[in-house]
Image (cartoon, rainbow, N blue to C red; front, top):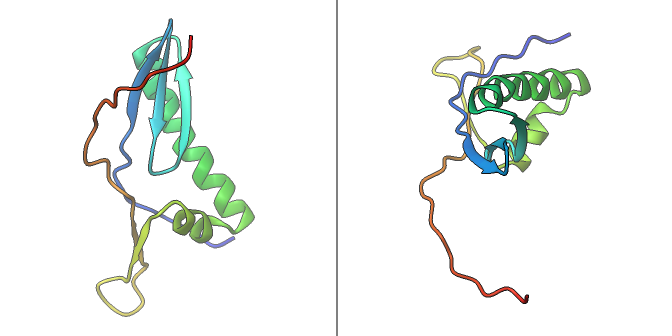
Length: 101
């Protein structure tokens, strides 16, 4: 099996829903949760590992990353592995809405 390595900083947004903490990674469009903030952080590492293992196993990593908006960069010299740059969270805001009761 082909060895694949990605070095990237994947940003997570932590949300609280009742008693659960949700760790959402926009760059992977995936989330996990935990009963505590720390558990959600630990599970976020597992989420990344599972994503990488499964896409490598199925041979779909490049396709998945491209569909998620990652940018591929060629290596600095011939024969170097390409690197992938995830989309970055650059802001956060609240939008007022009216919901029917």
